[in-house]
Length: 295
Image (cartoon, rainbow, N blue to C red; front, top):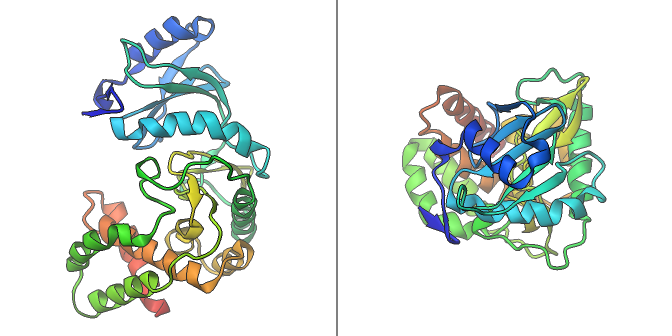
């Protein structure tokens, strides 16, 4: 596969390759212990480097633009948000060994929220919402609009309308009617306000927890400046009980944004219904049930 001149096969990204890249470009770190991170994500491969660093490489050509975006924008966003985000400490360049840019980050301690014990879910929801509100306030001058780099998160839902017609065939009867209605409502509530920063992938894999509290937000690969409705989806995927109401209140977005958020959520749920992973199918069923119960 090729994109922007890069040829990348994620299956070949391993510790020996990373060690060679470090020796070539950052020799001071090349002798540090190196091990893969199991929960490093799908779009990138991650390795822990010593105790204080990590190395992150795009796993396919389509993810290459995310690297330079993070290298450019994370330092600027860090001053705006109330929680730690990844810090770029080394910008690796494309070379004969690896034909794309890559990054060395400071290591952020914490356990992904999907597996962590959260002491106060309502506080967790409030802290997350306040982080996203602060992110929306970051300077947008020259920032990236939605596009392939963000998997079109932050853009108009119409981009997925053709695909959605096929996805709706994965459910039947009242479920299909309800899902189609949610999608119609989302398309009927277009984004008309100012464009602001969005994270684009607010999932429990990208939220770190320490001592029972939200401690950091990671993976800004799908971020950009556009419509923040995509950042509402966690209210259906992972928040429960009173925490859902706290998140809705603290996020401070209008009804049209929530309608588009339901569109994003139903689109993603229908995709996951066909997953080969039983846990994802179960999550998709829960999200679908929640969305349909709200109608």
